[in-house]
Image 1 (cartoon, one colour):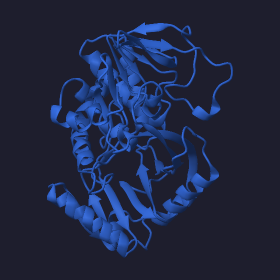
Image 2 (cartoon, rainbow, N blue to C red):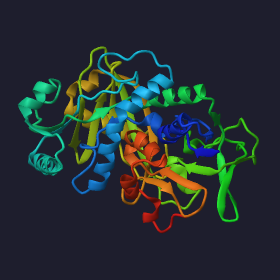
Image 3 (cartoon, rainbow, N blue to C red):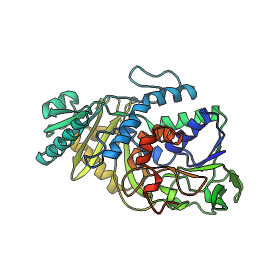
Length: 392
């Protein structure tokens, strides 16, 4: 049996693929779908999310995006979702109107020109636009926008719908989801042979949020779940169970609501030296994100973080200040030293990694599952754990 440690979008996607192949699998997570996946904006944007220095990450992202339509359709069928609307795929609010990256000054325009030249060399679709052309596409943009870059192949999805559908699909296939914390990997003769569940603490650890290693009940503390293979998909908490160079990167995010949509596609730009993006949902929600903070396992939502988000978003789309605040949340992205995920078996028998996706967990979930199913061998080499000496 495979035991998946972590019930975010990556861990649940891996479990679902295994279950579809008829392989026995158990997911262990105290609060599935409540960590970084719950906070994520859901941008499927391999073109606009990377720089010209991150060619390997771009290759992974483009391959992952290609898998999303089929992934969404199959998941919607497995989860018995209601029929999707005409503009989305699979009932998951998967949309593909592209990303508009805008510039305000000469430096911003020069950066977009460099990115456009890089994309054109790779034969990726990209369109340079004037400020007037940007506002023709998105009339609510600020008058100060001087130009932009449209990546028409980019898409986005609602991660909360995706994880809910994955949990429903796993339930329909009889997959056991153990709502408990994993305290350690069980090793026998040098191999990982299972996981040990932790005793719930007497006092909840409020600073840790609801992550795969946070505490819950439901199973006896100290119980061991035997496994033929353990897949470590615990996101930012993976380093607490194995020697893997994954660190938490905090991101605060805001969800606004409007009776009439302000935007038709994702819009992003750099304001006051920091990137900001706005992602429209089909239900009228507008996601504004996200901060990037190296603060350990701190998941507090702060006034300063929300102020910066709203301030920068207003520079892009002044009308956001009139919208209702629907939700604010902070999540922890699992970052790695080279920004590439860690996917595949380590040197320890019985232990496989599916972690370190940083900003791309939602985008790369289908690809990660495919790699662990033995597909995409060339891409698997880019994110092999073997590139880090400290990984066991």
